[in-house]
Amino acid sequence: MNMLFNQKVRMTVGFAVLLITSLATNYLYTQSKSKQLAQQNPATENLAFTQQQISLASNIENNFNENIGKGNTSSSKQELAQASKAYSVIDEAKKPKFSVNSSQVFSSGKLPTTKVNFNQADLLATLSNTRKYFQEYGSLDPDVQRTGLLGAQGVTVEDILKTLDFMIAVLQEDIANRRTTRLQNPNFINSNFRVIKWSAYNPQKSQKERLRITKYAVFTHPGSRKKTSTFNIPIYSLKDDLAANKFYTRYTKQDVLSGIYEPGGREYGKVEPLAYLTRKGLEEALMEGTILVNFPDGSQTYFNVDRNNEIAYVRGLAATAQKRYWYFREVDAIKGYGYKIDAKISIKPGVTFAGDVLNIGLGKIIVLEYNKGGQKTLKMGVIADTGGAFLPNLHQLDFLAGIFKNYKDFGQHVQQLPEYAQAYILVKK
Image (tube, rainbow, N blue to C red; front, side, top):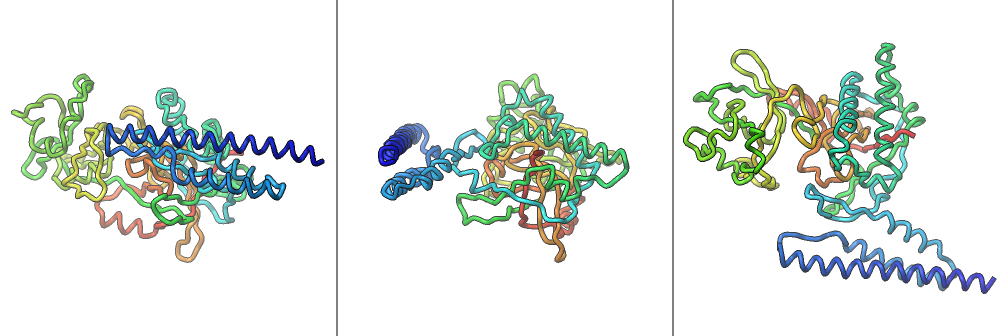
C-alpha cells in the first residue's frame, strides 16, 4: 500500500509540476507579447492571461502541496478541472478581454411551475428565420459556429440547432391543432430541455445573480423622399459597386453632415439618399438601427443599418458628438443579426433578445423569470440580434419591446417589463 501511495504521489507531483510549468511559460510568453503590443500600440491591452488565472495557478500549487501532506489529492483534482474550464471572452475585434470559468456563469436550473408567456406565431416566425440563417449562412459566418462559454457545459452548435428544430416542430404542430403550445408548459420544458441558469457576470462590478434587461424598439419617424425645409437630413445607402475600397471609412458623421455627398461635395454620386429626416430623427435612427418612416403619401418603409464607417462608438459621449456613422438599406421587416445586410434575420417584437452572439451565441432560447404585480412571470424569446453594447457582455440582454410612435409610448410600455430578471437558457435533451 505504501509503495502504491508513493507511486500515486510521484505521478500527481509530476502532473502538477507540468501544469504549473505550463502556466508559468504561458504567462511569461503573454507578458512578452503584451510588451511588444504595448510598444506597437499603447492603447491595446492583451488580457489573454488574467490575474485570476495566475491566482488560480498559485492556488493549485499551494493546495496541492497541502493535500500531499495529507495523502489527499481530491481537492487539487477539482481545481485542475476548474482550470481547464477557463474561457477567454472576446470582443467585437476577436481580441480577448477577460477570462471566466463557465461554472461562474452557468449552472443547472429548473423553471418554476408558472405558465411561460409569448406570442406563438411571432416566436415560430423568429425561430424559423434564425434556423434558416444557420442553414443558409452558417458556413459563411464563422461567428455563429463558436460554441462560446456554453461549450464548457457540453453545449455544441448542433445542440442549438436540435433545440431550434424541436421547438419549431412543436409550435407548428400545436398551432396547426389550434391549441396552446406545450412550450408554455414549464413541466414540458423541464422534462424535454436542459434548463441552464445564467448568473450575471461583469468583471468590473460585484456579481449579481440576475441579468440586467434593457429594452429597445423600432420607432416610426415622419420623413420625406425629397429634401424639404423640415426634413433636410438624409440617410444614405452605399452603392455596392463603389463601396469595395471602403472610401466611406475615411469620413466621420460630422463629415457626412457637412455635405460631402451632396451636389458639389467631394464624394457626390457615391451614395444614394434613401429618405430625409430631421436631425433628431437621424440621431434616433443611428441609435435604433431599424426605423419605420412614414411618408406624406401615407406609405411606410423600414430602413435598417447596413455598414458603418468603422469608427467605434464612445460610451458617455453625446450622440451629436459621436463620429460613428451608419449607412442604411431599405428592408421588408425588422431585422436582427446578420453578417451582411442581405442576410439579416427577420425578427418579431416580444420574442427577440439582442445579446452577446460571440460568447453566448446566436439562437439561444431564453426564459426570463421575474415578478410582475406580485406574481411570478416567465417570458420566452431567442437571441436573434446583437449590438456593440453586447460584445462582450455576460450580464445583460436587450429585449425588443415593439414598434412605437415616440419615446413616451415606449416608456409607458416598458414600465411593465423588468429591469433585472433571472435568466435561463434551454437546450434540448
